[in-house]
Amino acid sequence: MAIVHRTIARPCRDVFDALTTPETYPHWLVGARDIRSVDEGWPAVDTAFHHRVGLVGPLKVADLTKVLAVEEPNLLDLEVRARPFGRGRATFRLREEPGPTGPRTVVELEEVPLGLLAPTKPLVDPLTAIRNRRSLAQLDDFLLTGDSHRAPG
Image 1 (spheres, rainbow, N blue to C red):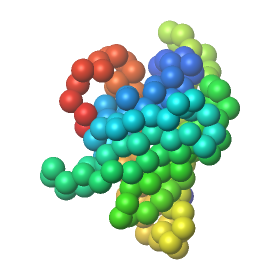
Image 2: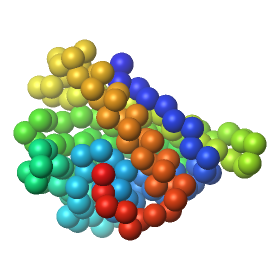
Image 3: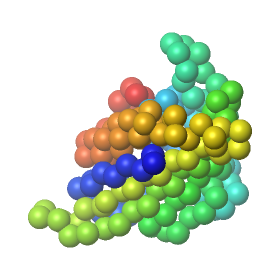
């Protein structure tokens, strides 16, 4: 199953704020290239942000990510789209716990393919897990450095 975890040495509120600020995504989410627009009222249920996903080299595909559920500051459930590949559901669950130098947040990211891609789950889970581990590591680095001026990765 494509569920990955990462403990980030930041309070839950900081992590949740990054997840609900679409402009941060190109800095930490593998494949995210740029944000085209954000619906008014984001991150309310049924609002979306419109983005471009990088494929190979300079090739980009425009699509959107929509909020399915939100429970501030512990849950963000998204429907992600990256045509022509299809749709998926990405669920971020956050749990704050005490750490040796202050609060830290355990981030769980579960991603599953939806629609026509659902039967491919056993095949894509290992690749999804690799990508999501890298994305959470980059989110950790992004929050640690606070460097929003880095080139998106």
